[in-house]
Length: 353
Image (tube, rainbow, N blue to C red; front, top):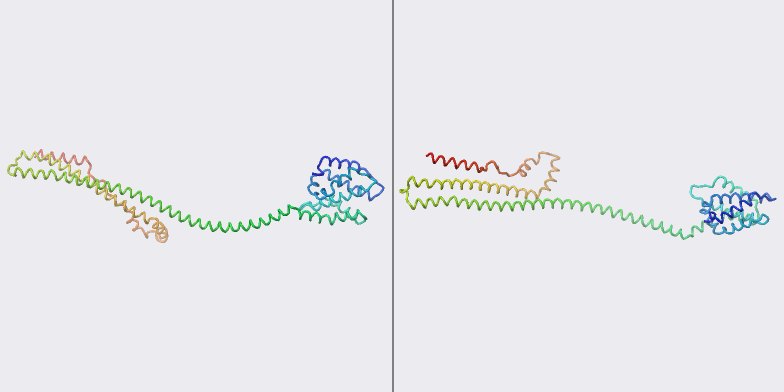
């Protein structure tokens, strides 16, 4: 901060107040003083713009410029020095004003008037004006190029090129990874489906084991009931053989009534257990069929989806054969009340006889 500094701003204000209404005997000096007063007035009104764009001259002639204004004397060469310094600041502002921007019409007009004065000027004033117009921009450019910040910019562009190259490599790797991930996804989908069917197969297997245990229990029950059915008959045969057929009379016949009732009841329950055993065997067959279907159901689903596009009924008979269930008819199982009714009817017929 130079022009915006409070102390420096007071120096500019004091100079403007002192030189604003000053006139000399020389028209050239009056022109140069008027140009300096106009430019310094702009510096006083908009110090931030001049601070930002005129760092080169602030560093090299800033303090000298302030001392000349602070100790301004119309009888010395202060007018020429202040005039040249003001023009240097104007040239730097024009050189670094920024892309797409231009000086205002007033400042552009001031540049043209100084150029006209430069053609008629002599000595130090001419050489300093020539330096400010042509050589000073080169010095400013050299200082900017050799600034340490430029090295950072160069390094930035180099890093940017390396980053772009690295980005291209990453893009290629990402595309390759996408393809690889796609293949892995397909495999995982297959494994997921296979795992689901493995779980389904395991569930059927556990159900099949439970049904086989139930079937064995029913089979043992059949053997037990068969033995119980035969036992009274064998006992009756031994009893008849022991007393002889001739000694049998009507009184002995009434002893066979409970035996016959027991046989009927045992046969009835034997029939129920037999039907249940047959039903369990049928269920085991259905479960084993579904366990078998789990082994090829995914391949069948893919194949049927393709072939049904061409012919919707191509696999109809196959599906009806494979996927039809093997069921038993539960309506054929006798109810307990039906068996009791048959036994009571049988007893009534014996009594009536």
